[in-house]
Length: 244
Image (cartoon, rainbow, N blue to C red; front, side):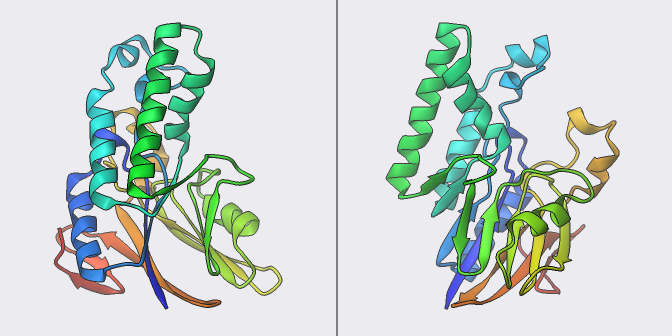
């Protein structure tokens, strides 16, 4: 039997520090055999398409430092790149200004070297190959958004008789889908601030919650549990406990 933990969506310097600390404490208690991080390790808001002038002038130092610090502390066995992380890879390949492209390439190199040092498998953000399997549990960053995102992920990515865990939506959701031998999907919440300045006008942010998932794999058998941040305590396996 193997124990695993899956957390996603740190977003660098806009992380929720209480949630991150709770994750570290839970890792010490649970002692998972496999740790998977589901992507958006960094926010990279200043290199997104459509970034405003103020965002473009924003320094990336704090964002990068926070993401790299989390890698060093959490020490994932698997890092799934997210759509925010991919911004750096796209900039390194396609940016029209040489000095910006050079800086992005150095950033990609630093992240890759850090993962090699930690013996962490890095998986690209790609809808056809961007997943990691542990028994009947599949881990992805996420490729759909909105209220039906978990349903779509379950339909497309859940293994027969298994479950797909995803981030990306910053929400906590669960869906079972009718398919041969069954399948399910779970959105595990995020490690980021759920009340960011850019999404105050978006009703979807009201679904955002802090949390992570953990569970057990034994051959084709599996159990997955949601850890969810409450107002004062954390709900873990349907019990309120003091972490963080």
